Length: 180
Length: 180
DNA sequence: CCAACCATGTAAGACGTTACATGATTGT
DNA sequence: ACAATCATGTAACGTCTTACATGGTTGG
Image (cartoon, rainbow over all chains, first blue to last red; front, side, top):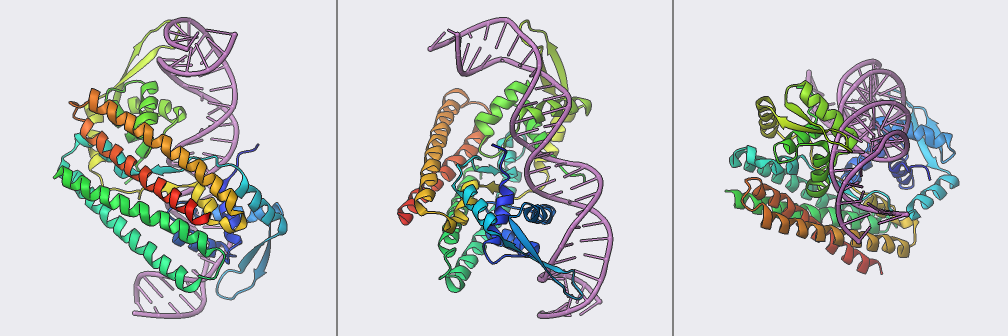
């Protein structure tokens, strides 16, 4: 089987929510999928084009003045089918976590612990902001999309993000204590 | 400042441990850095070459029969300095987690929960094996490298891996319960 | 007045994997 | 016999980011 391009399916999936333009897809990615998937405009726009070429989506051009024409994309039934096939296909990639923080820590003996502690504290702040953002998004979903069929699944991925961020914060604090 | 290539520094760093061949670097990556960094041979061998060209390492060719010549690489003082500079330079990349599992879960409403539960269970097993591997490595370090200056830092990154894997397992179990 | 938001898109290049090529030795 | 381990390397390809190009509207 040809290699699956998961980002293509991420975009296909977002078209099934109320995201219908490249811009909206990017927004959603940055706000709600950011803790487990990322995509740049450089990938989104070309992918939307191929999605149409493959008959998985259709475009509707909406003229605007002052701004570039808005292009709204909608899944075709073939597109919906492709999404379901991808969803039910077996997991291929083991989730992967990539961390410059841990990489630098691993080689920590070449550096003063005081410096290492500094970037652990920096990271701790980043984590704190992350967690705050998750809680805000959670509130948004609970108040505005409670009824949506998607909400249940979105809250589950958020729950994941919250738990991981909390665990990371504890590890940071304990590691800082250990090194001081 | 030119963009930093962290994988280059990962290799540079590993040369400062007792990993001196491309093969050993790959082993170490797969065993001990696997939960926060990954590199393939296709990157390792060319990078080792450029490291020598840049004067950050030297090679020593050791003829072997039956096998290709073994090439042992050693950091130069310029290489050690480069490693320290990189270590003390500010964090650039926010750690990133990429997960096909969560991506598929996010679009869960297009699929039967029974199928979703199946891949959560599959993932739970993967996590269990991961955790077991971490515990084995921890024992190895505690028994064989306790005295090494590196051990302290290695155990800290391992601790991170263990905590995250445990948290993920709990999330998996709770999510399965929730969906059943 | 300036920043942020809206809105699309491309080209160049960085980063990383996979498949291929080669082949002896050691353990089961 | 067969798989795994040791050991190096390249070419093709896939994936993804960055920088650039364009420019009006809205809110502080």
